[in-house]
Length: 304
Ligand SMILES: [Zn+2]
Ligand SMILES: [Zn+2]
Image (cartoon, rainbow, N blue to C red; front, side):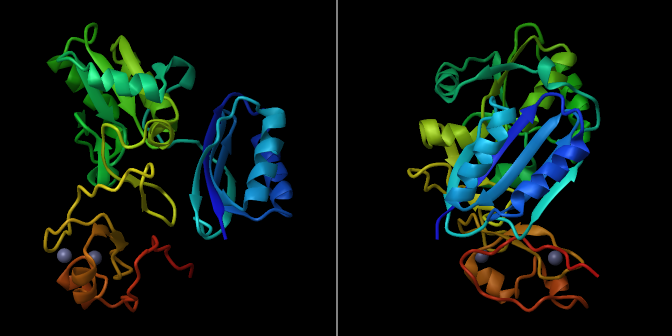
């Protein structure tokens, strides 16, 4: 069975987020869909998988009210989420307020590829994602802000200002589907950077339009796939097994449920360590039995 994995967002006023949540739940009653959708008075942030019929029906349904929404679609052999969650919640967790309307200039995948090709010393490419996402794939020449959490991003921008002239520096920003850049590019501008660009539609859309050109490795995604190619020509593995250093881009959640750490491992090492991230986790009190699989899924904490 073929499923579609949809990523999309909308920035604009939602007068009654609770009603929108209710309408979504009502609509989904008769649809084959699973995913995670956050709705606030500032917009919608959605990721979901659906049968092709339900995908079409949902897109049409949402487009009647929000015609500007751009759906980025991957194909997958099964649902990419365990259940459907629709919640009234902040779209992107941030340490500081930012508005999408104050964000950087949108750049198409074609323009983005050209900007990478013409990149000079006054240009930096900033990866607006976490280290575990960066590790399995990123744009060539990009840099990853050294942050523990994205709450530290404004501080990163301020430090950058002491190293680079904010009026001359061209800042190219990208993330998975584009939503994080909408807000973090606004923060970058707020800190005084005048030339800020964001990759429209993120890496997902880039892969569909430009293939793996200038992209190294694969793409981390926040669903059951964990890591996916961005295009058919994307076969490169740049990351390594955390135990033996052989190339792999397979992530596991540690089988010690009190640890749950996400780590990269080759098939052999993960089996030797029974799905655990380190030896001490193997003898912990709450370890799930290890099952060998080619496609490990993210582990969701059991509800008590
Ligand atoms: Zn290994
Ligand atoms: Zn562990």
